Length: 218
Image (cartoon, rainbow, N blue to C red; front, side, top):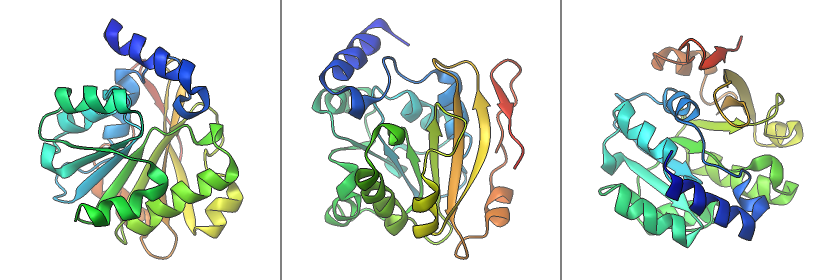
């Protein structure tokens, strides 16, 4: 984590604390475990929401995704400028996640197999959460997954929203080497994409590096 990233992140947080959600970027440990939920052998598109300075973006590429497979959606113009310079070949869209479906359709982007989100869901009001999550579910293919982290121990998606959107969530790892510690959740649509089948496709569902994270029971 470089000093310029921290300064940029803190400046953005001071402008919009509820939209950024944290004072510093995610740690490499958290980013690696987020990326571990994605199957690098898949040829599908992966959409990343709220990439910030690109910690998770870098981990997704290191995981084996081709730059052309990755589409990142960021509403902060300063972050977008940095991301375009830092990750050539990755499509960076300066946009709001609440319009995700229209954005992808307008750009003729293939239906994603996964959405990886670093958005601060718990800092958003219920209506905004619903709009973003509905967009994510509508764009995902039938067996797609939504990967989201949170700083709390409960699901970052309200139980009412989970029921309305027919989502089933599973906590997959607790990351201690992050400020603050975080928990990663993976969500899929109930009845449309069997959770067990999807789990079998991801080799490294849990991150087990000693001192980095604590796998959680499914």
